[in-house]
Every structure is written in C-alpha cells, then in structure tokens.
Amino acid sequence: MTTSPAKRRQTLIGLAVTLTAASLTWAGANLITGTDPSALAQTRTLTMGTSPDYPPYEFYDTSSGQEVIVGFDIDIANRIAEELGFELEVSGMDFSGLIPALQANRVDFVMAGMTPTEERLVNADFSDIYFEAQNTIVSLTDSGLTDLASLAGKRVGVQLGSIQEGDAQALAEEDPSIEVVSLNKIGEIIQEIKSGRIDAAIIEDTVAEGFTASNPDLEFSVIPSDGPSGSAVAFPKGSDLVEDFNRVLAEMQESGEIEELVVKWFGEDSPALEAE
Image 1: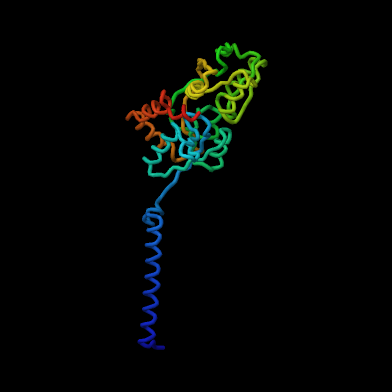
Image 2: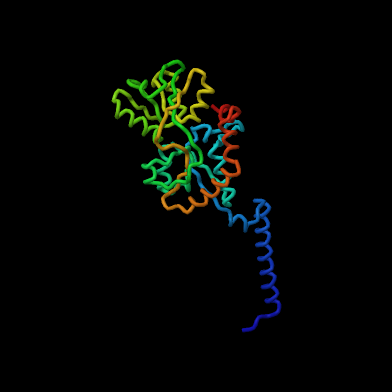
C-alpha cells in the first residue's frame, strides 16, 4: 500500500510537534530545578544517623527559626561527604536506636560521639578514632561528688545506650548501693540533677563542660579511666565506606582541620554554649 504526499506531510508535522513538546518539557525541567537533569541523575546521598541532644557534637540550632542539626560531628560529616562526592542527609533519633538503625540499613553511618566498644564492634564496623574524650561526674556545685567512691548510695544518671551507661552499670555491680537511672537525652539528665531527683551523672568531659558553663549551679570532675574512649564513625558490618572515611579523616588530622573544628565547637566561643 502506498502513502500519499499529503499523508506523509501530516505524519512529519505530527512528529515535529511531538519532538518540540518533548524538548520544551526537558527545558522546562531545567528552568524549574536550575540543574542539568543529567547531573540530577548522578547525585548521590549518604544518610547519617545521630542523636542531636549531645552538644557540641550534635544538637538542634533554632536561631534561623527552624530546627537544624549542627555541631562538631556534623561539620566533619559534611566535609567527608563533600570529599567523597556525596550529598549529606542527617537523621536524628535517640542514641539507643543508632546501632539498630545501622543494622536495619536505615542509615549509611552514625556519628554521635560514639566509642567503639567490644559490644558495639559485634554489630557494627568503626572508623579510626577522630577525637579523644574522658568521662566525668556531673553534680550540683559543692555536692562533694567528685570521684567514683563518693557515688555510693547515690542515684546516678546516664544516657540510654551510651558507654557511660555500661560504665555505671559495672560500677553498680561492684557497689549495689548505687542506683543507675538511664534516660534518653542528656538535657533530661541535667534537669534531673537540678531538680534533685538524681544525685549525679556520668557524662563525657566535652559535653559536661558545655552544660556546666551554662548552668553555674553544676560542676564536673574527670574520672581517670583505662577503658575504651574516643569517638569514631560507626557503619553497618562490611560497609565499603570505612576505608574512604579513614582516608579523609587522616587528611583532616594532618591538615589541622579537625583541630580547627575542636576550637570552633569546644572552645569558649562555641555556638553550642548559646544553644544550651
């Protein structure tokens, strides 16, 4: 069967209209997003799990009128993601839910001032240590609770799922007169001390410094320890990210970037002090 010239012209015109509409749709997408569609297809995202109640590591900043998670860990994570060519998405949750989130692959990695204890190493892989810290006893000023022996017969607060919880439970096994009170958030623990419902808390030194600076009725004393300490990045078991993260962390240590962030977030002018 042959096709008349008029019929062929109609077909070609229809094809041209279809191609023009498709081009306009593609261009429209560019105008709306401001991004080359091919670049959108190449965008990669890493999801970080954290517990944003632990200044200056991570906490909510509301100065812009919105809740934004910021802090020492967030700055490090942003730097690593940028170096590796990823966008970073931060997911806040209770500290006790972080390792389960890794196990369920709901997050790609966790940064929350987390120490790689033997128990955690069973369920997660860890990066090299990127920051060292010590435990402290936080209590009301002049309470006399300055060492572990002074906690006998006291109610001691700790964050649920933290290394400090394990330390306090071990202490209570040695001295059953010590009652361990586990709470989800550090802020809750601080309020329990101030209200007198607990006597003291075991909290990491850098975090204790921030809370005592903004609460003059509180003080802290460092606890000497030979146990595991320091913060590392946690990953699902077998994650391919560990080597790359270690490489960037080492570069940040060598260049002095980590030290700059320590000064920014743990120094006297830390934004965390304004948020507490």
